[in-house]
Image (cartoon, rainbow, N blue to C red):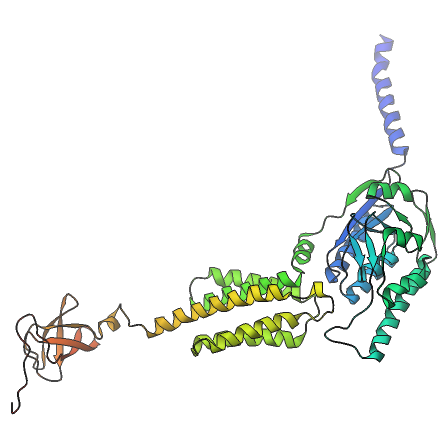
Length: 447
């Protein structure tokens, strides 16, 4: 009996010992991965900043910044690097997957990491600054190159990398394969994936930008990928200037349809949403105001074509202005961040055709005769049922009407309606026409 009484006590003690052992065991390390793919723009900075904050909140050991980018905006690149440098946890910059690249601004970001790595078959470099919106003179070109080179040298010096070789990517636009970058000490290691990368860096000591040293414990780390917010997904998705341009034009077209066909409501609502999305995406990109002015001019020309039909002259001018404005709209030297000629033509020409089609419908509607209502009676023909001297009855449009005539009209004469006042018509005789009740009067000389 005594042994049975102590059994619950033994069970409770066993549970307590197991839970205490688990609580005392060290937690598995955590690693956060954030993807930076596509163009470098202000949304990139927002994504990296949010990922760093989330990694810190999770007490992650390291943040892996996975790069696959052709480059982007210098200002956004500098802001992103500032976030990496200020990160409270070490940041490993990693070019992946195989076949990816970290070119231009991406090369700067790669070199800014506490550790830099590349996957096999990737490339980096080609970081020469180019003019925005035109060619630079020799003095300005030298200033921009020197500024970019000095910025890169300062990063490489702090990270202990080969600043001399890195500078050739700026001054000579040199690019490097993964093995070339490793051999010339631009990166620290080559690994095929994130899991292998975390194994390789386990136990490494990194020197933070402020001089502190930190040992990485990443073996068996619990890897999570930073989930972008809905806003970040939308903005990153439409930040491509080609997509933003398409959204803007589709929105403008839908709003134009709403104005030409008032009362439909749906085109106006949809158009406003699309136009605002396009404008919000373009707002994070450097805008050339001449291109923006040409876009506005194109819309104005289309509107004027609707008001003053010019047989398509204003419409064609609007199409040309729209194509030129699209090509000049984004003020950046990177061709991948500009609106492509094919996109400009594929959007502007159908937009012009649809707009001119709507204009032609509106013009024909204004010129066509009214078929309904009281105005539709004007010009209708019929016959005088009684003599109009000046008032009487006429049969018009299948109905009997009270009518008056400025001159006497005999019964049976064909008449034409010239005006209507409520339920009374004003008519005139059709010379030489016979009515259903007899021949029309024939005027003779001397009558």
